Length: 417
Ligand code: ATP
Ligand code: MG
Image 1 (cartoon, rainbow, N blue to C red):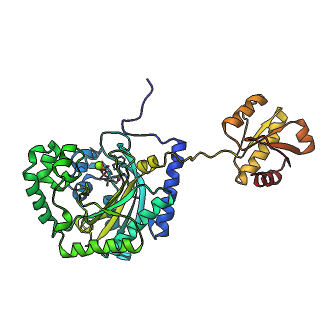
Image 2: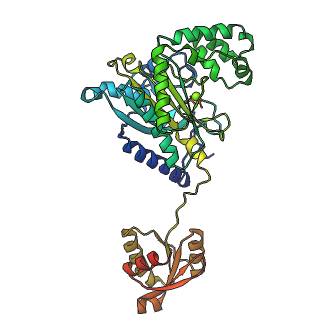
Image 3: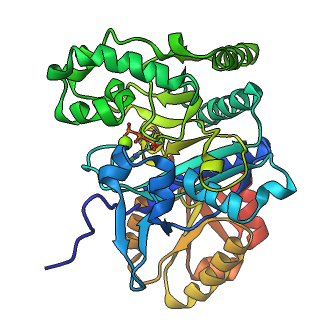
């Protein structure tokens, strides 16, 4: 029996890859424009990095990590997200010593042992960006504007920006208590996961996708009413900067994140087109993370977007590209001429195909059709003798003559659109 890929792990075939490249290239362009530089960190890290940063009582650390013991008896984990590794590197390489304000981005595979479904896989890919060293809400707004610009640049206006504040270690415990008090009376109606979350991570109940839990928490107190003065001011400034730059957003006071390191501003780009896989990108501030990982006390903010989900939103956009020309040949002696022409055209950046199997003219033309070549030309004895040939535009049969030279053909392809 032929072997199959592991469940939840996908092949990305060329047509799909073109969509991905478009997303990746747009992200690079927009991020570099905003002064970000790419950082490439390993896929495998010590398990401790993730349990210490993401938090022991999170879904990711409790159930979703690909953790194993290597041959040296070390517990290692395939990264479930990017920020922890980037911040480990930021500390280890003392990037902050040069300048605590770093703007970094990354892209690559992440791994979580989740139930595979549309928009949710075990190996998935994220593009993320982080800003360190700035407390000012201006950094939050710059990052959100960059994310919004990215979606505009890939021509997607549908995912909308939602923002919230999760407070800080000063004010969040108050909210946590208020929420627990509220949940206490409804605990019997919560799902088993949320019953557990009630003690370990009550904020996560607001994010539960089970309808009964959503109903039970519908009237829960709002985190925004429990913010301390500093957090409240910070959130108000973020909103003011977004208003100043005319960035559309809405406030979602029920938004929590599945990672413990978030403080203050959190946000998601949300789509209505992918069912319950509604978050296309997500992120927030993590002012305590760098010191928690043993680094200096430097704040940070970042986001990650799910490449597969962005690609699903771009499903209707056509990314196939077709050859400019198919060179068909009649006899074997013409193939040398065709081959040299093809080589010359390829070297000047023009996409050309020709027959490699000495097929009949009819089957060569079928292939030209199948490849959706823009033009075709047939080279026979006569064409070799005169050094000229008739080029046919495939869509309507329009014929134009050109010299059988690289320059001549280039001229023709440029002139006849
Ligand atoms: P969700 O609520 O959908 O599980 P999350 O809160 O776990 O998302 P994050 O950890 O914030 O997601 O990751 C950022 C983005 O990465 C998500 O918004 C989503 O687009 C994408 N993502 C997360 N998990 C997966 C997965 N298993 N498969 C595909 N994409 C994913
Ligand atoms: Mg998740």
